[in-house]
Image 1: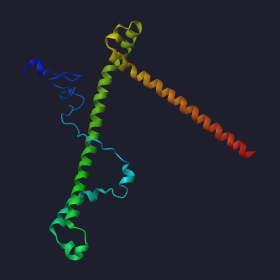
Image 2: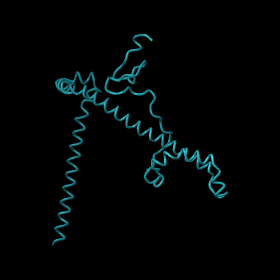
Image 3: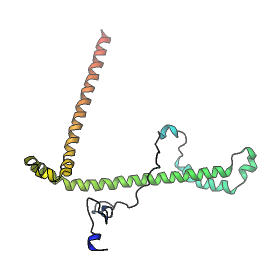
Image 4: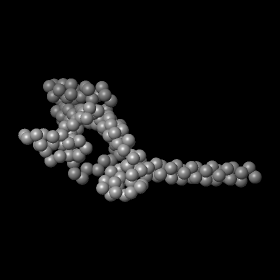
Length: 195
């Protein structure tokens, strides 16, 4: 590999090497193998209602593989309960399958927590580096559009916190106004009742 092809690019992806292999000393490198994509067409349903009463406790998850192995190795179910009993092999397979999904879920939750922490570290670092640029960029852009025209995406990015703050203030005023209206309405009802 030539020197030009092995150069690390920070802040964007290169055709030869992505920023994923760079840590910047603040977070782990972005993994090359990302989390799997959910199957096409899958739409999540409310798990609270759909699986109510079917969420196992941790001890059940931990013991399921042992129970499955025991059921596979013994004829006690068939011998003691007869032909009317459910298949021990089918129960064993179902328990092993369910426990496997529980392990996938535990890994996914741990992975999500790890990813969230790394993302937080990376954004904290990036925004901390960007902050000293904000005021001079705004000043220069206010005097002339030359810088904003040369870097339009950067100009929009630097303006986002100000836009977000305006929306938050508008929402806060709206909520305060609604709350005051509800209080006035309640006070009017109380006054009408006392008459």
